[in-house]
Amino acid sequence: MNKLKNALPAMIQGLKNAYFPEPLVLGNGKTVQPKRSVMVYILPILTIAVVFSANIIGFDIGVLIRRGAQFFVIVGRMIPPDWNYIPDVIGPLLETIMMSILGTMIGAFLSLPLAFLSSDNIIKNKAFLWTLRMIVSLFRTLPILIFAFILKYIFGIGTFAGTLAIALFTWLIMTKMLYEIIETVDMGPFEAIESSGASRVRAFTVSIIPQIIGQYISIALYNFEMNIRSAAILGYVGAGGIGLLLNEKLGWRQYDRVGLILFALLVTVYVIETISRYIRKRLS
Amino acid sequence: MSENIQRMYKKRPKDWITKWSIFLTIVALIAISVPYVDYKGLTDYGQEIAKSIILGIIQPKLSLLFDFSSKEAVPYLLLETVCIAFLGTLVGSILALPFAFFSARNLVPAWLSAIVTFFITVVRTFPAFVYGLMFIRVTGPGPFTGALTLAVSGIGMTAKLYVETIEDLDKGILEALDASGCNTIQKIRYGIIPQLMSNFASTTIYRFEINVKNASILGLVGAGGIGYPLISAIGAFRWSDAGTLLFGLIVLVLIIEYLSGRLRKKLATGV
Image (cartoon, rainbow over all chains, first blue to last red; front, side, top):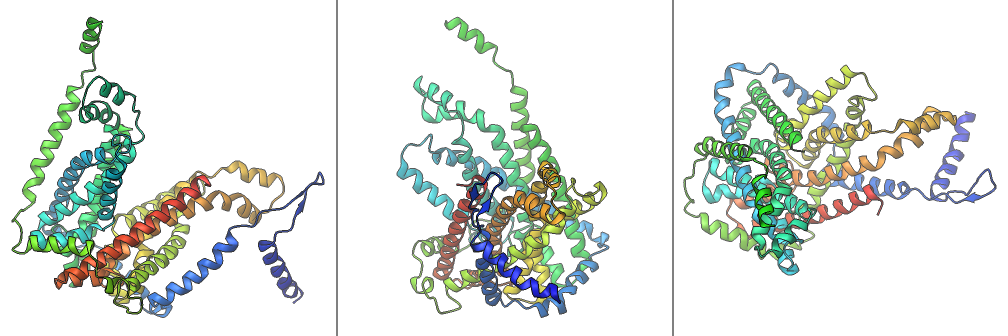
């Protein structure tokens, strides 16, 4: 009881200390005014934001308690996966992998000239540079699935729309990653070659590309890793690959087959990541 | 002089094997992947659609863009998307904490770390969209499902980045606090939290940025946010609406990216 009685004033004291910290007296007689912690601003703002967003999205703990276990029921029914289903998965899975390979390669290839045009140490025209960068980042922000969804209407259902979506997405994102790298390179060789009469493009290919080629391949592989994951869902909007199958089996509640699809995806991503990590480690 | 140059030029590194093998690998990859892509040409109305979308983004419908009262207009949809991402990120990063601490090799035995790390890898493999497809069957359509999906799918990446911070903990500080007579709670408060806080906050902000993008596509499965109106506008060939929604989404993501970049830079360097 006594403890409880003391708890309240202690809390008030603690709060007061957080907002108006008292000066400390050091051993040598100096007084120091401690800084107010940023947490005293962040915590109330965070709390308000949480309550506000919980209202907007209709947060309902009841639904979670009643239905939450259902998620684990679904996961439980995926184990063991339906191994007999393997032959039907291989085709779409290969499609997904090939879409990512080709899409990433096209995107990576196209990003080189665009990155050249948007590096501020090569292009000195500020207006041109910022317009180009603005256009690139405008489209870069769109999720790959929306690219695929729009392209499906332009090129029809199938792997072409998916490949193109991956290529476009990779092109834009790699351009940004690449010009950030180009802007940090040593400009000495570039200037030397330019002053010997070579054109800017020529100077770029012989002096800057050798400096960035390792990082270039490394970010291309990194993008490939990411693309293989996103390619897995492109089928959902009809852009080819394993996503269509996944949605269909989930809809039909054939969870053991869903389990197999997810397992196949897991193995693929793991193998590709391991290879890609190995190469990237060798490169750096 | 010129002779010197010639001599050095002849002595340049011979890397034709590397060059040729890279070239051949690329050719081989193209050769095996191209047959999988079926190009059937443009659909009948393909060009029309491409033009309408671009026009829609360039000339957004102002009535849809600045209508703050309707729940079908851009401001509310974007607000909903941000709220889904915010709650999803917050819950996800709290859920990630135990996984992160139980897989840090400097805190727990190797076998436990291996198990939890494996779990984190599995969770990380699947895109948020796959979780969305599953959760829609658990809690039904709506933004709540979206937040739940992001919370669960975010565990993998967030925990992985947290672990890297935890494994970098400087134990010297803890020893110093020990020596000055601090108890366990004080050690956590003054020794561990200050070391982790800025990196954790940075990770969480980065995840929020990703989740805003994720939240915008979760609408496709019916989990709230701007995705569903966008897809139905495209599906119903209402191109100017679709362009307007895309415009709103692009602006939102750019703002979030900018703020996140600024904040994370501040957390990393203090300026």
